[in-house]
Image 1 (cartoon, one colour):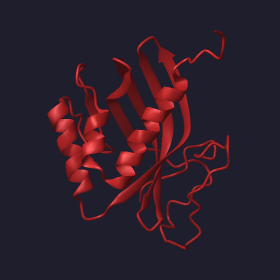
Image 2 (cartoon, one colour; image 1 turned 180 degrees about the vertical axis):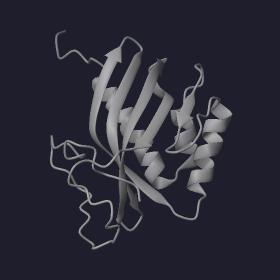
Image 3 (cartoon, one colour; image 1 turned 45 degrees about the vertical axis):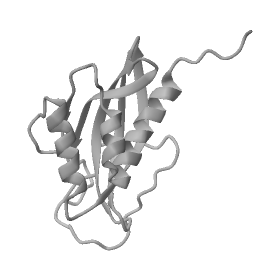
Image 4 (cartoon, one colour; image 1 turned 90 degrees about the horizontal axis):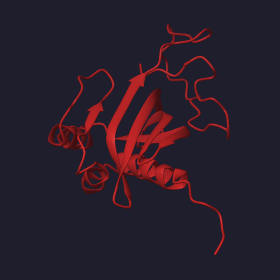
Length: 166
């Protein structure tokens, strides 16, 4: 039997999509199920210290989900680098309110390992991006022109890391 060889990239991207779906839905059981059980895990939320235990990582997501402002996170521009049973996904996170107001753009790295036949997270890191040339740091007004969509293949940072959390 011959056919296309599954290089695992689609499965890793599906796991990455599941992470952002759980994040956006504030789905605690789904988020907990995405994290590795057989490997050490860690997580670095923007502006926070590194969390280096599974219990601390899961507790951090529970706190985020129970916060007063619920967020949606959309992964954009995902790229996968694989090596055996490990995969690194780099992408941009476009953070929005549940109503769709764009809050900012973060650079993110998600590291997955294969546990049996399932790709699970061992590390998530998201951080803000510095303003680039042409960004207007002095105008924090919300003029309603935020466009949370990005065209296929477009660099969400505009080539200079322009998205910021204000």
